[in-house]
Length: 305
Length: 238
Image 1 (spheres, each protein chain N blue to C red):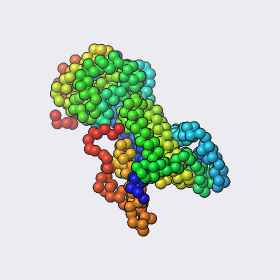
Image 2: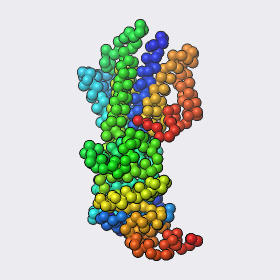
Image 3: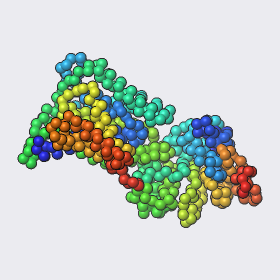
Image 4: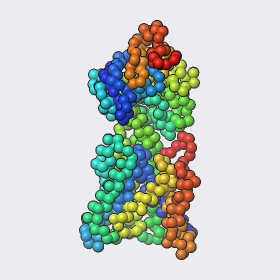
């Protein structure tokens, strides 16, 4: 593999994980809840592309729509699904002031519920689906050929991250999200509505999960009801090595994990490649031993978006 | 304006305040005074909706507010500057004020109030773009009060306004509280120092171990010579 293709691959995978980590980090920030169901939100966004059926041949549903409509539909669908999980599963628990372990277990339940629904309506056999066929092209960049879908993933992620930063810094609702992430009760005492700010975090997080659904399917073309689990785990690991409760850290942590995974795959000797994840997660353990507070946490009152 | 009647608040099984009865009239400055652990801060958190009373009623302008959410209570006109100030340290001074202005439609909607608040605390204007975590304790206290004022409270509750402040700021903050009262805001202030409480307040409630053990007008209490023994309890050696 040529070095530029390798760099683009690493950036692309890193961006995707960064986007997942950001989605998880947004909800964690305001609710102190690790939303394990984030991976399943990505998964149902992908399945919404095809018609529910037991057949191995997937018939396109949203996948057949024109690109702008397709994008809006998947992102909107996942955002609404995220809001629904908040409204019906997590909000009633929060109002009863349960601890975060209970919320975590509840998110496991939501996660398995969504998997089972997909299993029921689509069966457990993987299906293939094609969206954005033009992205399968290669583009020539600096004399080498690069997959278009990777370039697009990097650009889309960069744009979404930039938009999130602008929102959190400039918009009043964004500033309220940051205030609530730092001291939720104090924010409420100043009039910030708890339900609104949490719904906003879930909606944004869901929209990002929808974007990941699209980018992931555009690259792999495969639907599998378990596809969300490794993605969510990558996102959690990213947020933890970046520094829990720190959005910039989550993004960098997710990016680091994705990029490291691609680089290990390419640079490990051929016979060790099947053990790539053993190396990757040994690296994670090492990072946590050296910096248990996370790689990107600065002491003191630094700005964290 | 504010009336508590037989209010009890528990942390788990342990009552932190035991059926206390108090009131704050419009235009007054009232102080809760007492040693650490007396239940003063618990009472303020109960009024602000952060803690729910397990017994008794709290009324604001005759309306029962016990058990309402904090964001509702602040919208009714009660603002709390809590123990420890709790400024958003990762936000700038401006952003702290933006959060507080949301209730009344944003900083632009309360532009003249925003100007008055910055005139009251000029230091905030000069630190407007700084992270609030980088302010000194006295500056943070001013920010915390400024933030509460932007919610347009009828009743402002301030928990230990002078705690941890340099002497120059103690005078400034207490002076500011008096000016706010002159401008029509009713004040409920938590103090540990009986002397400062008597200086500042029209009426004082002395709390100990979750109960109100003494109440009265500052002018009456100032003449009593047994205040110290009441403050510390009979068994204390003071």
